[in-house]
Length: 272
Ligand code: HEM
Image 1 (cartoon, protein in one colour):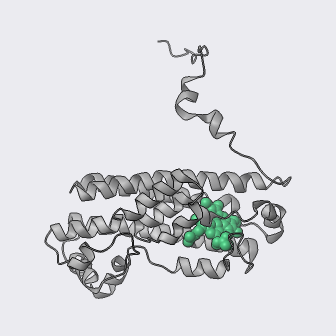
Image 2 (cartoon, rainbow, N blue to C red; image 1 turned 180 degrees about the horizontal axis):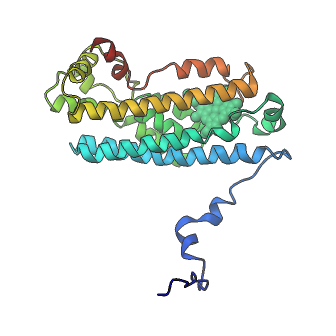
Image 3 (cartoon, protein in one colour; image 1 turned 90 degrees about the horizontal axis):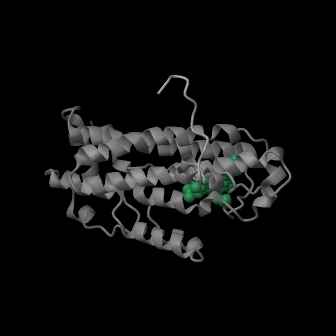
């Protein structure tokens, strides 16, 4: 083929690009509810974040399964991809991170009672991190597919559960109560698990288990950053008003942002 050959223009039906990407569907899912020109980027940022949540859930499900099957390299690849995806997710705050209350008010009432709190994909991320709660299924009772997916995720071991089971299979003293815990409940930190991580971190820094601990720590840090960027954007846009989802707003988000992801990976550091 010569260097100046032009791309094909002639397709019998829709383009192969469209058939794969469904760009026509994707770019017609934006239905602003106000006349305010600033609403479009708020809506699209939210949709973009939903897509990143979807990718990240996919990576963490891959990693969880791989850990269960003792395929650590596959899990590590998925976790490392997810860290770069979390960077991209977090960067997508930029266009809406500095809204003034007036700018946000221009379309806020159009959101009605809608709130990101009702995001099922975000909830699946939290479930995979071990932040389980059956009450988080309640908002989705009216949406059978979403509800079924969330219910399944609630009863599956989290990324952290599978990590701890792997550590146990490698001979580390993870307590039986942790290994056989009811995985549909929120993970509660354990002093023995903290001691396991402390022991690992005292040893060979090149070991695959320390590397796994660090990959999870990267994930935990980036999730914490998302929560904090959300918190600060919210504080700028609405001060201490109550949320559209009915919560106390910033005060409630502050409490959520204080939670540590993979708690013992952080607390163990005091003992190394
Ligand atoms: C400046 C824009 C935003 C403001 C002012 C805001 C405000 C809030 C508030 C006040 C809450 C607490 C629940 C409530 O009462 O509504 C909340 C929760 C939440 N928001 Fe936003 N939000 C913004 C943008 C976003 C975006 C773009 C997303 C992306 C999907 C998002 C996702 C979430 C999620 C997932 C929660 C639940 C967090 C949890 O369960 O810990 N928010 N938001």
